[in-house]
Image (cartoon, helix red, strand yellow):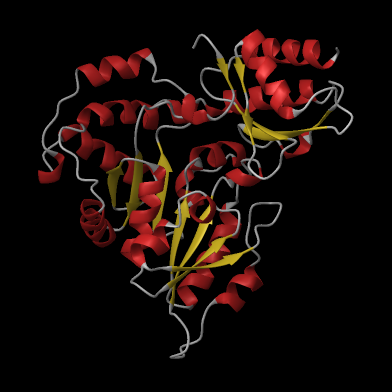
Length: 349
C-alpha cells in the first residue's frame, strides 16, 4: 500500500500469494455445487469452527441476513444489541426483507448483553406477542472498539437459548481476532452457536467474501435463502482461493495487528490534545477523542493527515470528536511510527 489507511481492516489488499492462487484456482459452477475451491473453503471453514457445513456468501452483511431469514419467519422476533452491526449498519435488512422484528438491548462496555435482560426480553407464548426465535451476539463487538467476548459468556447465552427453544447466531466478522486476543480456539468461542458468520475480507485480507457455518440442515436452508437474495455464484472459486489462504494462514498472524494497535494507541496517548483509553485496546481497533481545546477540528485533522502525509483515518458516526483506527496486514510498525510523527507534527502547531 502506498498510503497508510487506518479507516478499517476492510481496506486491506489481497497478498501476492492470494493473487497468484486466484489466477490458478480450479473452478466450477457453484450453484450446481461443482466449484471444487468453493467446496473446500466451505468445508475447511466449517471444520475450523466446529460445525458441520459452510456457505460462501458475498459479505458479512449477507451472511447475517441469510442467517436471520433462515432462522426466523415473518413476524418473528430476534434479540440483538443496540450497538450491533446487525441492528445499526445493515439497513434494517432483517425487518425490511424478512419481516423480523428486532428487540434491542443495550451493549455493555465488555461487549456483552446482560443475561437477565436477555431472559426478560424473551416473549411468553401469548397471541398478543411476536414469537422470539433468535438471539444474536457479535464477537468481536466492533462498535465499542473490537472487544472480544469470552467462551464462558457465550456458553451462558447458549444455555438461555436452549432452555427457551431459541437459536443463537454469532456475527463473528472478526471472530479470529477474538480467538487471538483470548488465546482460545475459535471453535470454543462459537460452540453454543447454531450459526456463525465471519469475514474473509477484513483483517484476513481476502478481496471479497464471508462464510456462514452451522449444521447441515441449517446450511441446506441457507442455500435457498442466499439464492433468494441473489447470492448464487458461478465460478466463485477464484474468490475462494484467496479465502483459503485467509483461513489457513492469515488467521495465524493477527497478533501482529493487535500489537501494532497497542503500539499506536500507546504513542497517541502521549500526544497533546488527544484522549485515548489504552486499557481498552484488545484487538486491532480503538477510538481516540480530540480534546475540546485542540487547535483544530477532527475534520481538519483528518484532512491534513490525508493531504500532507497520505494517512487516512475514519470518523465515527454520531460522535464528531471521535476517530476510529484499525490496524491490519498492511499497517507495519514503520507505518505506526510514521503516523505518530505526523500526529505530533500537526497537533504541536
